[in-house]
Length: 407
Image (tube, rainbow, N blue to C red; front, side, top):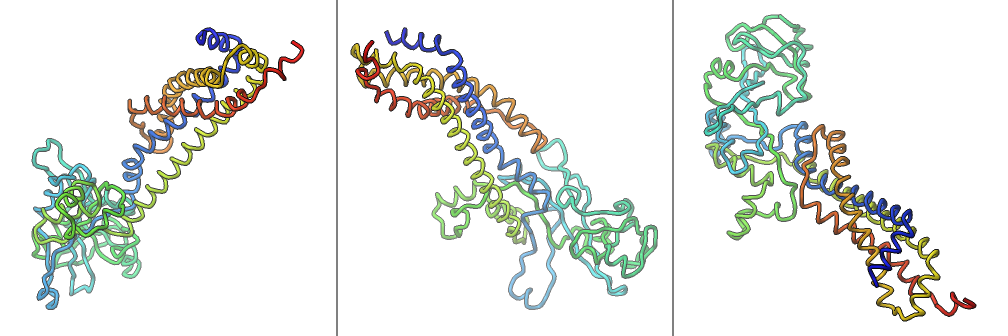
């Protein structure tokens, strides 16, 4: 009996049922696409934010007496590759060392660093490409990076002050250099000479030494737990913290593999990333809720209009014995069928929508997850049931004696 009623309802109201299925499918497709985006947004946005620079700074650990005496401490360059062996090694996108020295004769500072440097990582076939080019991509070089040991860059402000131009020669650290480029960084390097790390190390007698290291790492947004003091954590809490990709836990692991170092997050960068990601996720969830609510309203409106055409049918069913429960079951069954059909169609549509969003926003596709299928169907059923709430109430309020009077 129920099957025949539902079958006749769908056959007699093809357009109305199609509209409701489409409303559910569109709402579900948008919701599934946004959920797919929310699952990928942390890694996608984190990679985008990495273009703003490093988020971990590694410096030599200075003891009390050394600090008072003003003694300079350095890190060993050979330890830097160990950063790619920590637990979160795959989250390390780049690292770049700096060695700062001073030419007392010329009264200028010179810094040595890597522009592009392949590192041979133990257990890896391909070298890890790193350096200024991927950690600090905003560096602007007019000319080219030094390729020989007698070539150097000059900071833009220093070049203006000393009147230096491309191909000029300058005496630094007891050696004559040719200026191959003028660099502008927006930082203190604008007032320095910048050269290849190995060249500056040899000339300053600091072979294999670096002053500091900047590391760019993909991190998990900081939450309340991440700010807890590791020394006050229980063993279980410490394991959870250590095995989560917080900027603090990654910095701790970096500190463990670079001898004599202290690694600290660059807080303005790290905190900004966390705030941006959390706000974007909140925005996505709000948009998801709005899309589901809009679809539910569409279903409700269409179903109420359909009910107006079926008032006599409902009144007749109630007159011949259909009670409240049977009336509710009829409309809920219709809603469930609409929800299931709309959910499957919406999930299929979400493939195209999520790919479009991925390519337009991030230049790459979003990962398709099978877990979204049950979520899509569940969301579509919720949409349909919510949409059926008002029509059911209206149907329960129909009085057969009033509607069928005189028939």
